[in-house]
Length: 152
Image (cartoon, rainbow, N blue to C red):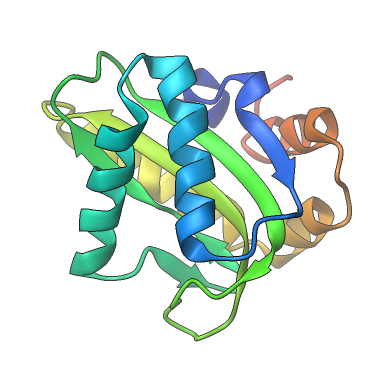
């Protein structure tokens, strides 16, 4: 599975006005609700509950908020670039790049495979630097696709 198989081009968004972790999760939940048909509040509550288990801020300015949803039909991914916000990351650094991953409750190993693929992509400092250097969603999508070995 390639990232672009689960990341629609219009789910790559730049929102420089976001100032908090809560606003970031809400923006991701709103975007996901429009694309998946799952209620925004259900998504936001599930993400908030997941964050209570431990932060999804993996360090280096990156977060991978993710959760399983019972009423989701297929895996969905979104990408959000913001101004740096306190995300309670493992390295205590602010987050400005976030991939949302929503998976059906019965997704099995696909959940872990997708998380690993996203994590690998964003742990590459050169790719993260390129992502930070542009505010064009189409350019960001192309960059993600190219970094993941796909044609955008």
